[in-house]
Amino acid sequence: MTKILIVETSPRGGKSVSRAMTQRFLSAWRNAHPDGDVIERDLAETPLTFVTAPWLQAYFTPPAQHTSEMKESLHLSDVLVAELVDADHLVIATPVYNYNVPAALKAWIDHIVRKGITLGLDGRGLVTGKKATVILASGGSYNEGSPIRDRDVATQYLKLILGVIGFTDITFVAGGGAKAVDLGEETMEGFVASLASELNDAATVETVLV
Ligand SMILES: Cc1cc2nc3c(=O)[nH]c(=O)nc-3n(C[C@H](O)[C@H](O)[C@H](O)COP(=O)(O)O)c2cc1C
Image 1 (cartoon, helix red, strand yellow):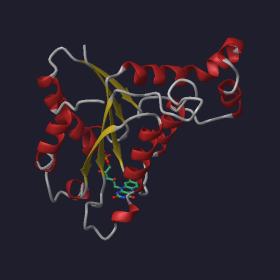
Image 2 (cartoon, rainbow, N blue to C red; image 1 turned 30 degrees about the vertical axis):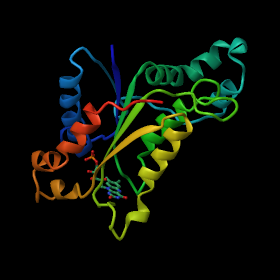
Image 3 (cartoon, rainbow, N blue to C red; image 1 turned 180 degrees about the vertical axis):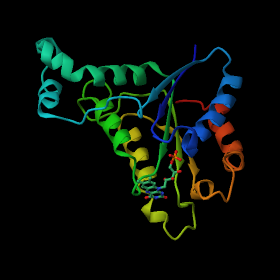
Image 4 (tube, rainbow, N blue to C red; image 1 turned 60 degrees about the horizontal axis):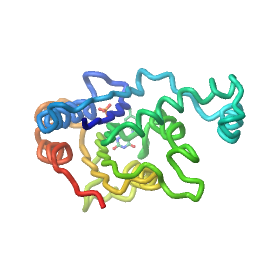
């Protein structure tokens, strides 16, 4: 059975453009994978922690020597890593904040990049044979030709870090200009509809992994 992991980031619930884009993506995905399994990790609801000294101590101690405190320190990371490793397709839906990913998503990334599990000790990514889709909503537009294209750090960063852990098949769907929805200049439905074919393709086009 195909399993998809959806990582939602926006704290804005029903007002969130990235979440509305995910819903459009998911309805196409469910049509294409009627028996598929959807796992949702909502970072707005997850009590994420940052990297701390006890966490690092546990991280750099071989698992066989883990104390119960170390196991506890790494518990959330273990859960998040297991969700990622179990999935065939990862979807990250996120706002752009200050040109980058929100802190909650960065915290998730700090939990899932784990030496020996998702990142090989030789530096090679171990999360292979999976597809990733990144759904971004941003107030500004960073498309080709945009005068602020070089500020699109969020896309560059996610491409880099997903590549580092082993993803080679990554599709980005950029919901640029989402401020039009907040300003009431465009409806949420109209905005998402303008991205429907990209979201549909990301959900349904099977790539041959080599
Ligand atoms: C704190 C904050 C920082 C933001 N920074 C940027 C930014 O750097 N670039 C941009 O294009 N939009 C920025 N925006 C606009 C959001 O990306 C936009 O509202 C987007 O729709 C948020 O995603 P959501 O609708 O899924 O919550 C920012 C919004 C907030 C609240």
